[in-house]
Length: 593
Image (cartoon, rainbow, N blue to C red; front, side, top):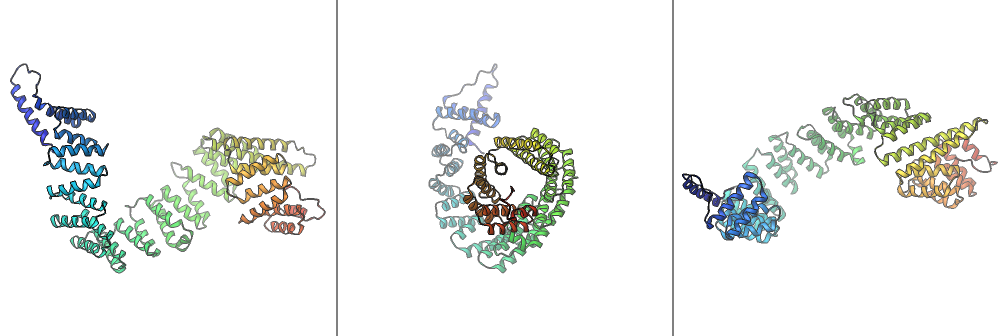
């Protein structure tokens, strides 16, 4: 930035120094009082520009003003330093500099800019009016003045200012854009179109100008002209991402989704569009299930394109796998994930996906295999030890499952995860207790000591889980249900069950537990109401819920309706022997579920 006063002073200092140069030894420089402020100002410039000490520079500028309160350059430098920190203070400093030297355009311009920064638009408007007259060759003054007119709700004055700039400088893109926006804001659409048309005529091969004109034609309902301009823009640059995006939005606004997806396919073929943007755009398309279903073929093309173009990119792999799962091709998604478990370096999420899908498909052998491979690469990750425990528990290898959970507990890095693991440990102990009870019934000589030990360990594990994670609805529900089944601590079970229901907004499974606890407490009528709600909310028609409802109705003396629900449960796959026992009239009451 030009600083005339500083240059003058440096010259003066050089002149004075030249006279002293011939003397030996050189005396310490002495300054007339009238030059003291120049000296301090120059030292401030040096501290700021050479040394980089802005704090010391400001101190020197203030000292210069104490020596000469009419020293305008110091006010200017202080205003520049304060414009970002304190715009209002900068505006006052710049005002003082300007008043001391009204012919200095730097001071004048800084004063106006500081007023804008500090939000004093009305005062800034007057300043920039004066600046336009004082410096008519500076196009920035017209731009800022037009913006200030717009802020003060004088759009026509802003347009007139831009017209004046156009007459003086010709068409400047940024000013033309402002003018076009103002014309649209004042409903002068035809003039806005004419403005855009003039820009296109001035630069017929500029794709951006044609896109602007196409957008205006689309806004005025002239679709054929809009499409023609989009076409010419693509002729000028067929790989313009901005043009394709604008055309895609045009088709989207007109709900021509097939054309929109066709344009999107062209966009996805461009390297200029980042993969993250492509994934985000695909996610927008697939967020609506009906849209996904109706345009599945086009969306499948997009997903396949990304999978082919980015075969090793995790975002693309995940997108294509989710697409396969959403379209019902679970096995193909599984094979895709499996193929990437051989990638190096190994990717944890691919193993997790394979294990989750194989668990869902109830393939314990495959789960074991991929868990073992995952642990080779990620031996310290508790999630894979948990998966190992789940697979072993499912296969009824309860001892090794509990060992896997113990390892995962040692590796867990949060209380919430520890709470989950203790909950799984409790589930495993309970299943061991159930199996022990079954074995005891089939082998009359077998002791029930193992069952009692397993139940004790189960409830102890649940207690630990809830200490780490008090509001874990799954543990609260399971703990309550198992206490109800055993007929133990039913009031505690009721409190936990009601909490699980409140946390999950009336989950039907948790409502079933709540009803069953009420039933075991003898509050049968209340249990019936809750059970009705559970069955109404259960979209899967779970046989367990149907059996429980039948048991409650039977206890209320509604035998016919109870048998109806028991038979429905039988049709849904409930244990035939258990249903037969319930249907036996001679049976005094239904057995425990």
